[in-house]
Image 1: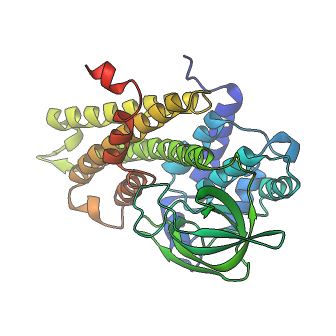
Image 2: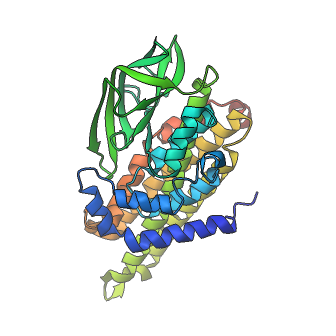
Length: 375
């Protein structure tokens, strides 16, 4: 299996890295985090001009019809620079619209706006007390006139306060159904806040809030799980970029920090430690690339197995590399003045989003064929 990027993918990665190196240095990122909105409209416009917002959108709606590997390329670069704009949330929302039928007039219109950078999306994965159970859904949809109304609440919605539209799962006659809710809809409440990694999340409440059903009866539990797998895959790609940045920062710091008159990078014990950090990152990268290749498999269990394996390995690598980086940086490794601390925080949040290591180990072990293979 060839995991090399195409020329177009590599050119996109290079262009995005050049932009971020010039305009999204650590200090600039920290200034954005400190603003009331926590995101930059100027950078979002620049992403649209670079074609990032159009990348996942189907060609018929003005996009480039990018697949998982195309998005993986982008997410790695965003992770490396600790970008806080709502790209992940919007890309996952686009996938939901695509799975529900991008040719439907309402979906097509929304996708066109996303491609142009005029609309941002967020997916409400979590409910209070649900932890990692995607199907612990208490939000209820009720038919009302020609549409539906929602009642319930969603918690820790990534960039929920920055989105123009939310993708919301709800119970409809006991089954899972997906809905699109406009942020300014009647009865919709949003409380945004900053998370420990500098990103933004929100609590959403719905009180007889008008909603449009996304797709038909075929767009239910299986589609909802696939959307979550897509989100987990993109988070793994972001983590790979962050792991690369953390390894690079650690190596550079050990070249400048001196003990006994020499840089600590010359100590063999620390060289071995940094080699182990690189191995962890490369293993996480390999399984993430495999998950991207298997995401579109016609066999759902193959997709589930690959995504869970990647999420487990990324979570393990994030903890190991993060802890070693903090130790290599000494006391500076836990201060807000260095990027390493913020990279570790972001990796910790990625690990606990859409299922941590223990959750995905359990999911992997529960898939058909695991018991026989382990016997």
